Length: 237
Image (cartoon, rainbow, N blue to C red; front, side, top):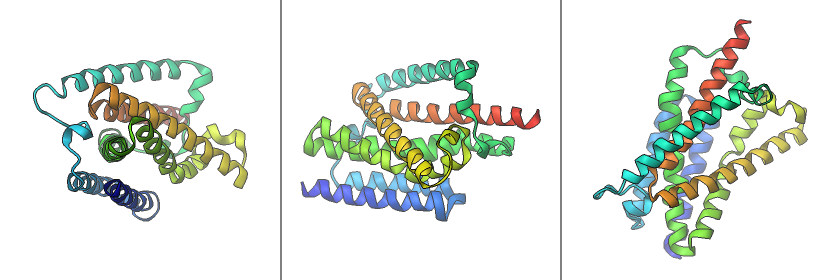
């Protein structure tokens, strides 16, 4: 129990600092901060005696073959799902995001191939589906491990949800003011918490962290790519 509390305290402290830095205080250094945080999180796991296999990162024998197969399948499913959503008028509006309208090609490529997969997906999966899930499962069992890590993952998105409220047209229905922001934040926390459960299940069923990283990265990066494409199209009309 003592080890779990120490791991929870350390991981939570690291993630709170990272959240504040990347969302408020040092956004321009997002990738560097995320890479630093990933290294610190892995060091915490090592000091706590969590093995690579428990993290879903073991590479002995064919440990990751199943993970790679899962990863490829999930990326394909996400791609098809987004293609369908982009083709349907009633779901297409969900990709509208004012933050991407003035973004150039270079910055777009940086976000899709570095910031999102490495800075966001890798760090968050190592934290929530790697270190936290392993430590919580070891101490309290799988159900509590999934529940607590997913709850924390939901609250991790409070600050991004506030920015999303200002930038996305999908939140227009809530209006303005504190109540509207609360609705957006609450919705994002619930949605990302539920997504966290899904990521946990992928991690557990595949016995690898790679598929949850791939799923997380493809959901975010492909969604961002569609948002960028639609924003530029609307801008040029």
